[in-house]
Length: 443
Image 1 (cartoon, rainbow, N blue to C red):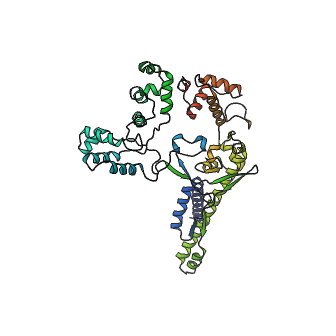
Image 2: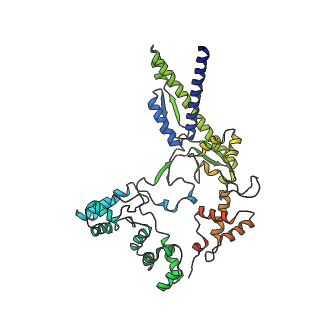
Image 3: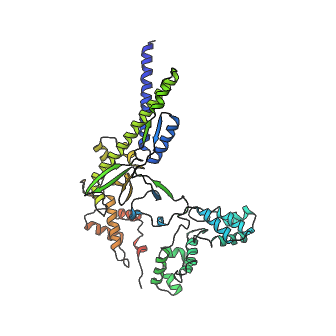
């Protein structure tokens, strides 16, 4: 047997395995969001005494409190996300009110029991019959407890469905339209689906009166518990920032997006004076790990910054034009420009954020799909078509809203060739109801 050949083969396999593991870890580091990366590095500092995190934050490292999946500027923010945040949870807020308003009785105990089943949106998540069975109480007692719970703030809390949540809010609002409560109580589905003529006929009121009720209901919240505690909020730390000065755009890395890890040289020198071979081997391994981590973190930051710079070049109009137009841009195109694999770009844009003076955007927001026409840079993107659809609907006569076919014809006049099916799809994406449900009845 050729032992030298076998040894050489084992060394090659070992080196190949080490390279594969290092590559996998580099890919993992690129894929991490900023928060995930910081958590990963903090764990590594616990395992490696030669490594320390420099946690100094930079001028652009203030977090953005974001409700929902991501924040993409004021125009795209969810209307229900503007509710002020409270420092206490909904549960704590309700318990405090219960102790202030109700005497210490068996009924109060039942109310407190129900509060434990109020979800983050303010809805009751347990059936009253089940609640009565669990507590050994009578159903009527549990109903009384719920009635008292529903009298607490915020209005609508303790509702069992959307209909009840809206009715509870109407009940406590003296400025609500006169017929609002009864219309929602007796004709909720027909009202929501804008089947208004039978309702108007039954109560001898005009369609304009029902329109007034509908407009009022739009001001109510479907999530009475929104805005309490931290359930709706997470923080975003931008990885890069785009600044505009004298008409010029610059792209910068934030310190948090490019964390700094420091080598503990003094400790290394002290430990390296030992004659123990195991100690020296351990120090060598930990030093190599530090060097690899430092290189991978720097490479990650450089890749994200480079991707950001290319995005700003390709989507320049988005950062300078108030209409925020986006040109068609694919991951593959940017990968070819930068000279990396498409999967690298995908990892570099997911969960990474760019800060501007008008909002914070996830990098993948800038990659769009082309719609119709030629393959030129001026080709209309899906995002731009959606903006056109939104603009057309905003400008329509709401007494005679446009059908999808009519929107299609207006888009065609502007040089946009898409199908009626695509118009309907974009309408759904934008949250625009059908023409029937957009119709308004004015007095």
